[in-house]
Length: 423
Image 1 (spheres, rainbow, N blue to C red):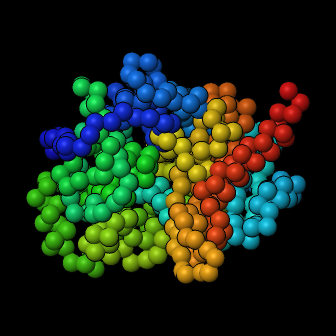
Image 2 (image 1 turned 135 degrees about the vertical axis):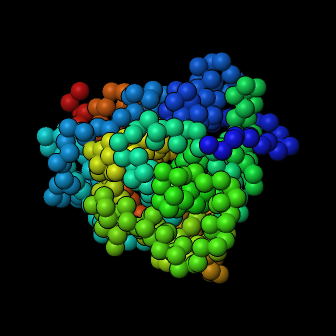
Image 3 (image 1 turned 135 degrees about the horizontal axis):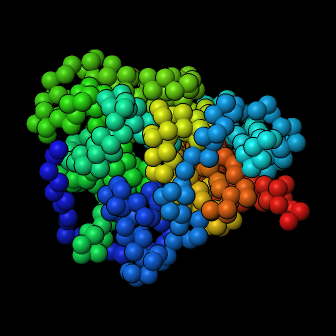
């Protein structure tokens, strides 16, 4: 295994403030994800800082797959009443949404509501869940019967950031466990961390640099198999000397084949390129990226059933989506503070000159894609409510982050009214 060397810049030392998406707070010993140890220390009172909201405090054993005994469950036919209620919540902007809601609170009578659920568009950073799927698929292909080896690879393999990580504005948390100091900055060349930590950076704060590094290593794992990880010199040689057409073929084998192998429709869900400019320059993925609310719902349902690759992979993917980082967009709704939320979002917006309109973040007038996936278990640890929401939207000229947050509150209240009104 590559020797770890944690590199810190001369940036100011920070303490986390605010609610912290990622592995459960007690997961440091198992995973080595240093950020969650800092969050645990704050929440336990051993360090100063803002403690996590109740929904973010589940232990690792509590974050588990909910449908292991319901592996045959399929997305049911549309529930007319629930569908009408969901469409009403969208209001005048309904035609700009693709939404799916799967109510699993009563597993004897699951309910499904959807509107324009087969509409596809670029889902932005939600595509990073497909990077996670690809890495876990390649890991299982290399060691199908050795879960201990898979865990060792995740925890002990050290990745060193290189040109593939160029460039990104998302900052990551690098916590010095021994000295209890935190640096928050963008990933820089030479930064070293475990696979598990890069996965966390990719999903918890949606680092494009971390995603590109994970895509690089997923391709390496697919190519080298049990000989993974190769040396740093070999990594440089491989990407420099391998012909472009072969790299494109390897990209598609790495990221597209797992979609179809796991029963999903590649015509409805695909990650077609790297998440960084330099990654795209070095490897041509050969396709566009897209998803629909229906295809994303199918992904999450398979995960809850332990059917994405296998139970081991599905369980760790779900834990990596557990929100112990700052809650944003859909997941930031205060109505979900007591709920365990498993979440990823992605946005793309752009503007053109328009008289009387001021362009703003998540408020494009040319394109204003906002995409959210969320598994909600409410309240955390009790699970009186359990439902999944997937949605993609393109509502122009409105703050789509606020719109998704508002919709989250309305759906939560709708579920409470249906299931808890008699309590």
